[in-house]
Image (cartoon, rainbow, N blue to C red; front, side, top):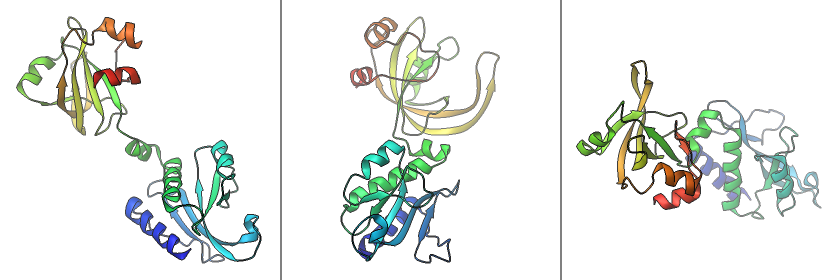
Length: 248
């Protein structure tokens, strides 16, 4: 049991750079871990008698208290062996996981990661989310993106809200082209670039790298509408899975 707890502490330190805290003098064996920015608790290791968990016996066992995304998920988990109602705040979406080997270390880490995400700030959740795919409009009246990519495979582009490094950008070039022409990867964001010509406004830009070109007749405006339900590209937007597969 001690071995699982020690491995868990090492995992938290390595992945989240969080140091253990001992906030309650009455319970010196309780170890808390908090988010670095909003200071919310994302993990609490406690030592409790088995009968406090509804088990037979009075042996003291270590448990990890963590928060999951919603109460329905918590209700499902506590039906599984080694999972119980959590102790910290008495809320229904906190669960307790035994650290005695009943639950595999890999599964413990999975739910710990879930707790970290559930308690994270908006900024941290944005940083942690998986890479996303976007369609981004390009108006040739304001910027000749075709010439730009003929000269270099890396260009700066107006940064859309929610876009981060590692995301994939599909540039839809407006009329007279009216089609997706480029697949790019975002390699840098938040580059200061105050710009305002009365039609285009920007405060930051991102650097994108060209990955692939498409023929002008492949993903036209008509094809996007008829086959993928996309009838307008006025700003950065996500794409359906069917289009994502086709663009690969």
